[in-house]
Image 1 (cartoon, rainbow, N blue to C red):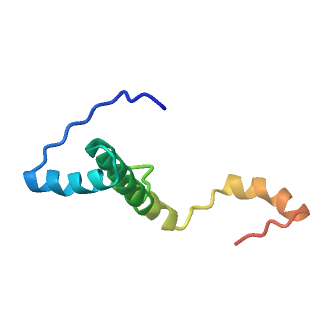
Image 2 (cartoon, rainbow, N blue to C red):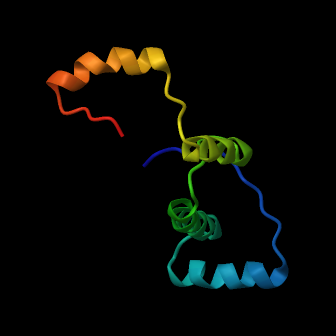
Image 3 (tube, one colour):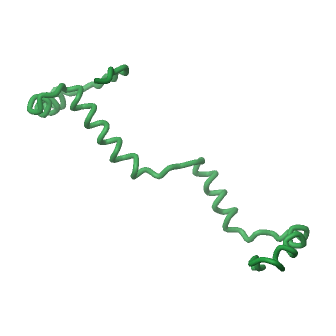
Length: 93
């Protein structure tokens, strides 16, 4: 059995304590075990439904706006791409 190292406290009303205590007694588990199992299940329910953000919302808005803008064609870049277009599948848009 793995040793537990973290400690979490929770303030419960008498009604909450009784409500949690019943399934603990029925399943022959401690109240702490019931609380931990319920918290882990809640975390598993919430995490997949929460969108992952790799940047701030303002940054992502600016990024999406920049991607929606038509790119400016650099004459030097267009000239550099010409030889590649002749011998491959690259086509001008």
